[in-house]
Amino acid sequence: MIGTRWLGIVFGSLLAALGFAGGAFAQAKTPVVGVPHDWQMGFPASYTLLMEHVASLHDLLLVIITLISLFVLALLLYVMWRFHASRNPVPTTTTHNTVLEIAWTIIPILILVVIAIPSFRLLYYGDKATDAAMTVKVTGHQWYWQYEYPDQGNFSIDSRILAEADRAKLKPDQPRLLAVDEEMVIPANTVVRIIGTAADSMHGWTVWGFGIKKTVIPGRLNEGWIDVPKEGIYFGQCSQICGNAHSYMPVAVRVVSKADFDKWVAEKKKAAGLLPATSVASANPTLTK
Ligand SMILES: [Cu+2]
Image (cartoon, rainbow, N blue to C red; front, side, top):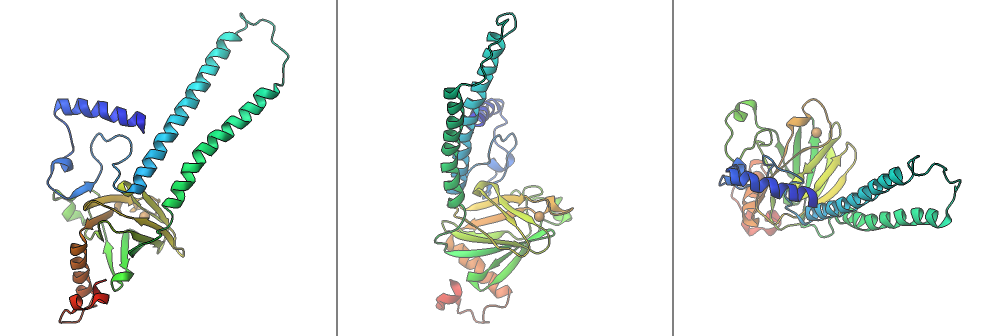
């Protein structure tokens, strides 16, 4: 992303000079952080270590692919010039060159090894949570998301895009076509295991800033994890064509402090009838876990 990052810096400075810097959400005093901006180039900002690793692998690949493209372009131009009919009227009959053949086999293999090592490392890093503090089960439905909290009493919430009427008068923290009625809520600085499945067709649970993109499939459980240090609201979208309202099932994740998360959990448990009438949640650690 070195190239795109530079382009972004150049364009960003130009726009700043013209007074257009920052989208509405960058200036609004809302906790919305993980949302696309006008004129954004390259990847969305990284909000997890996983997404930082994704971006740096992309940077490495961009350097490698640029060097290879320039090398091939230079070779082509040289061949066109050096072996032009006017400069080379009698072509050579050479068909084999052992040294060259070994070189053009070995060098690409080495390049692939250089790419494979960080690539596999990243794949396994994002694959499974080794020490998750809690789990959220994500189920994709046509066309909304359902989040279950098995470690907090097993209540569940449904997350749907805002109703048509609410979409007409959006609040500052409700970006168009991304805001939902109920966000998934998780505590900050906590390793959260994501278990994903689907009820009908395949869906894709994707949050750009987290670097997570889990295809969820009926009858299967797919695993991933997130650990978000910064509180705020982050957005994503279903990334698997899943039917006619595919583009109307955004992903919204609210990352809050641990205390706020416990409060939210208590509220949800109460609403689901999981708490006794007189709240003893605070006295019983197993309930507030
Ligand atoms: Cu979907």
